[in-house]
Amino acid sequence: MTSSPTFSPVVHGASLRSVVEDSIAAAIASGQIPAGELLSVPALASSFNVSATPVREAMINLQHRGFVVPVRNKGFRVTEVSRRDLEEIVHVRRLVEVPTVRELAGAVRPEDAERLRGLAQAIVDAAAGGDLPGYLVADIEFHHELLTLAGNERLVDLVTDLRRQTRLSGLSDMLHTEQLMESAREHGALLDLVVAGDADGAEALMHRHIGHVLGWWSGNAEPD
Image (tube, rainbow, N blue to C red):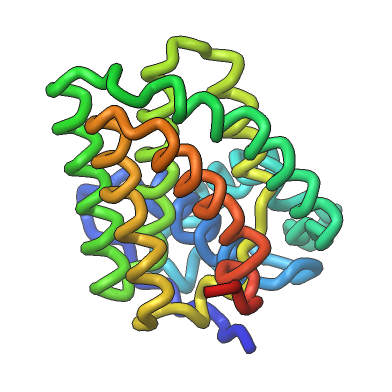
């Protein structure tokens, strides 16, 4: 069962639009805001304790990302992603990401590995602290930066688009669980395998990690 998200007021000096956008995107992606729910700009502005302008800008960006669709004179409705949609997303991601990670094994420069290790730790820290928006933002950045090392911009754009279409309806219920910590630690383990040149190990872990979309992250059990 999901719970309605409680948005924190935006800290003065932060980028209002980006903070609002990241928070709403995380709540939608994790299932805290379910498909079909109507979101009102004035109500969201009140929740974040900001004016309507950055919220409206954030919602327009989320519309472009496919998270919501506009409803005339009412606000924005959260889009739905079916189980079949998720299965197709996972299938395509495995086709392109798994072999790409395999090819990167043993070919990551020390400075790139150091940057990725910082992102991997940020994912673990966010999971430990129950920071779901922080977890998702760091997770997206880690995978984006890792795939960027392959030098194929079209591949990175494709995976980014697929991730934007994904919904993780069980993720919010995983807060403070060992499963969330395990999935968070997989990023560091994956990086270790890639840096060590263990192509088989990196390939297997990447295949399993993407599968969490249909398993833990959707509230379903996974095989041991």
